[in-house]
Length: 482
Image 1 (spheres, rainbow, N blue to C red):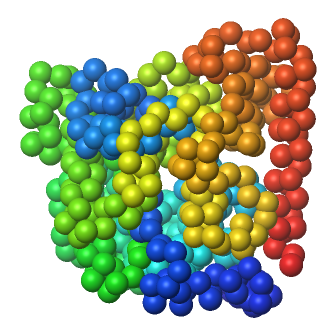
Image 2 (image 1 turned 135 degrees about the vertical axis):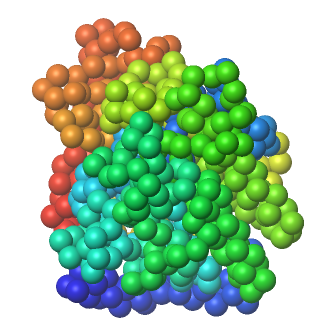
Image 3 (image 1 turned 90 degrees about the horizontal axis):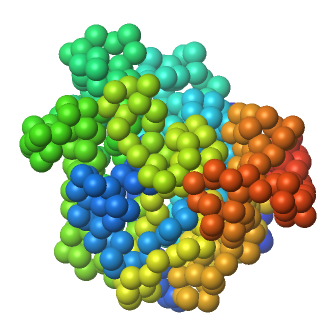
């Protein structure tokens, strides 16, 4: 309750300034005055590796709809998730701030603090209808009954559901569910079942509001289950004449990995583990195509900013045999700050602004969503807690940016790293020792050039140390003292 009051106080304090501009913008958006506000979709897979798409060269996986997005819009060669695990990346998408600033250090750790300003809150104040569909993983969704990893009476301190973070419509789980029949525990070799008994309730529910669980249309492909709700939301938003913000965070292909017969048959002849993994990814791709088709039917495809990425690199096969994802040429996997853990697929389709395909070689990040959308809407960047860690990609979209103006910093466990337009400096022991890689010449990070390039290593180390001090100050509450 104290945190909630802090957020309300923050809004009151800034009401005559930046946040007041947001609120006045809502009337313009609703009336159609001023610059037309694009619809915004943030679509994200879960544990999808860089190679796990056709357009990135997977030898077997079929992703025709993602491939078509890559042929029509911006295809990012160097797109980075905010972290090598999912909860922190999700926080970065919604705030433009690294989650080490507000205590979301890993999966199932911390929650979205009320003092943070989310993209949903900003857009809602601009007259948007906002919806969250799929995996939330930024706090618990119930304080009364056991749910998922932390939900229930024992997780009250981490209660921070999407409807308390700016979302009008929700169909959300706290964490993972099976990728087929999401409410039912699958066979144990699907992975991620823990001590649950196959055939019994999985124990993670879809919630649509305080104390309200979804009870119907929960069978079959989980991506389809999610998209059914997202499509209905978009239809209703368009019918109302208001722009929409849709966050669609698939569970696919996170363990437990299960595909239905239709999708298993697509990969007949492959080993069973690959059939399930490939099948659930193709099922998700099918829903991406369904979404794109729906936008065209509704007549809003041209004015919709549609982003797609993954929350981190692929899971380790030792965790579950069906964790068959591939990081391609990149070193490491999920949980690693080597590129295989954070270098992920990245796409942007926005036909009214991006009229032809373009490959982007500049590094970009999920941290950039927030400042990019604010820039597009002419909303002051200082509308919420500062500093932000992302940069606006609007100049890139308009063809006016070819290099990143600020590096991307990371921290996860004992790992810290910083990436600029060419180099990566990384430490696996919190700064005791560092490795330096030229990501242009050596994207596989096999040749440490720190000794040969001491000035570059020193410069990036200074940037990283300053950033870490800034994050420490943020966690102390500095950013909320206005």
